[in-house]
Length: 458
Figure 1 (cartoon, rainbow, N blue to C red):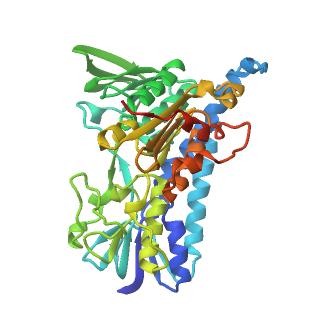
Figure 2 (cartoon, helix red, strand yellow):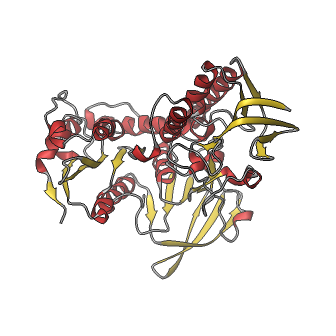
Figure 3 (tube, rainbow, N blue to C red):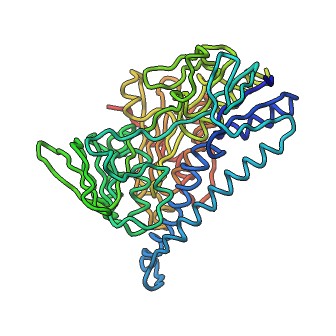
């Protein structure tokens, strides 16, 4: 049996930032990967989907050309080219990562899924290897659909959708969260008819009701049909390109027929595939691996980073998980999960950037919170671009004067939100932020000025 200083299970996004540091520190590393290298982000998430979103936006802006005095003629979509572009992006990134890892000194790559034999021993294919430290970076997958009739339906998840050879004529989307609305808008802009069926009373349920309402309006305004408060009763394959969804809404039985069905109703961790009980690693009721503030599991020499620990489920949180582990392992820093400020984006167009508390979280916190808002339609740069959908919302703790949250739904929101996160980590008064001079003409330059409108939450 071969012994290693480190066994790294899975190749999610923390892999590329931490494994080189381990190698530089002189550690021997075994990497186990039975699937595509790079994890969800590279293969089924950020890289391919944002590439598709970019193609969809190009189509959208081409159609809007006359609004800017630009006439281009009839717009057509080469769907094969759209998909070729995203496949080139993700395949190149995945293959490049694999080659890079295989070329590292003191790194052995095992092209097999890993399972625990005990708390130091891992089986990879027909081999068993031993590690002093083990890091689990095995990710998550789409939650399988469990509706009556689903086994008879040729349905798609976020992985299989990326293998489509033809543009769906009518895409039915089950679920109304981030993956759902991003794909819904993108495929609508590429020319599909799109229907979204959401179980809850609003889309993107993590967000404030007013933000969700604007997301809803953006989608409906582009011709997407949205059904809220739906209870899916069953699905049926009526013909090779005819799928029926039967649902109940407001006490009425309804039906919608499409050509393709996308199930996007959450994700589940891959912890059930690792035989964790053999190592004594505990999971919660959702199957996510329990970790402390330095990414240790219930077994001190086993760590879990990325989607599988349930502490973020974003690429950037996975990378940050790795850095927290590294600080603890190397003793070179003191980053911890406890200090992390939630930051993320929703990539519809215009995007939503979010950091810290939402308004509803602030109201539930019991704090004395101030809030300032401004519609994008009141920001000159947004008007100049004729992209005025959305709103800015900033939250401040009145007692400490610290910014505790922000939401930017609008042009550039995914980028602008990043100016808040590092400032919030300084724990400085919002008045310091207010004094900053920013570049004109931009949307970002208005962020300090909006603070002049702070008012107590009522």
